[in-house]
Amino acid sequence: MKTYLDFEKPIAELETRVAELRETANSGEIDIDAEIERLEAKSDRLLKDTYAKLTPWQKTQVARHAERPHFKDYVAGIADDFLPLAGDRAFADDQAIVGGLARIGGRRVVLIGHEKGDDTASRLKHNFGMAKPEGYRKAIRLMQLADRFGLPMVSLVDTPGAFPGVQAEERGQAEAIARSTEQCLALGVPLVSVIVGEGGSGGAVAIAAANRVLMFEHAVYSVISPEGCASILWRTADKAADAAEAMRITAADLAGLGVVDRIVPEPLGGAHRDPAGAITNLKDALVEELDSLAGQSGDELRKGRRAKFLAIG
Image (cartoon, rainbow, N blue to C red; front, side):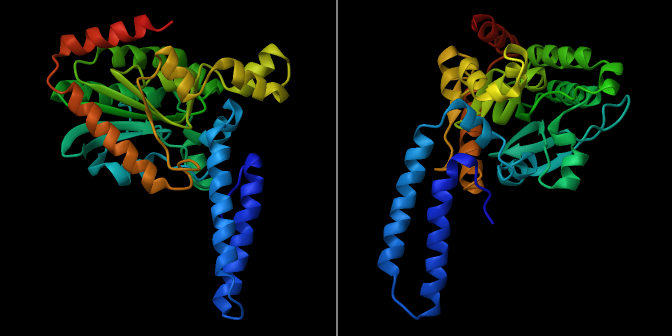
């Protein structure tokens, strides 16, 4: 059963009606094919019109959709021979960030990303994609591995933000995020990052200070969640939609500001409606970006990365 967002209710009603008519048609009692075709065309038009004018808050809801592809889905669709590597060699293996060796389009890479999980058990296991210090230290270890062996890096970002718990602070959350960001900027190999869902705060930037930053069409990327911003500015999370509008968190806004370099299109209705199509679009974009960065020296990559981020704002 599909999960519909609040603003998709008119679409849900039409699609439900089409499904009911299909069941009637399959019984063979009455010929209603023409009516089904009419309603399907109306549903498609409504879906197209709705997604052509999504507000920033609606895009935030799409980016958080439970049926949107997660890291494990992208790995299965874009990577060959994925070999996961675990642990930070200091404290633990944080499952909010997953990474390892892989091949993308025949090119060997180190692939890391946030994993949110897709059911109650896996969400708890992966802490809803909110990494603790050991997650960022694992990312640092894998980046250093990529540097040592001359392998390009790919990072997939999908997190509400770094874990804000007391134990994370006790183990040096801010320092770990800063070190991870520093390691991104120091890499002598290409780094391509993609905001595939939520790009929340320093928890996202820590693995996204890249040569090329890509962003899915309906993803969001921000220094704080709209609810968090609203709570600070208006003392209520009820103003989250207003905060999302003011913060300019959409792919189109951020491309205009130079924060992201490329928008990856999503299938009509968002990646959750056609995960396979979204994954194919992502793979094609990654292969192009990796090819465009191939052949640059370590110094060129570092200078390009530095210039890119200094030019923002």
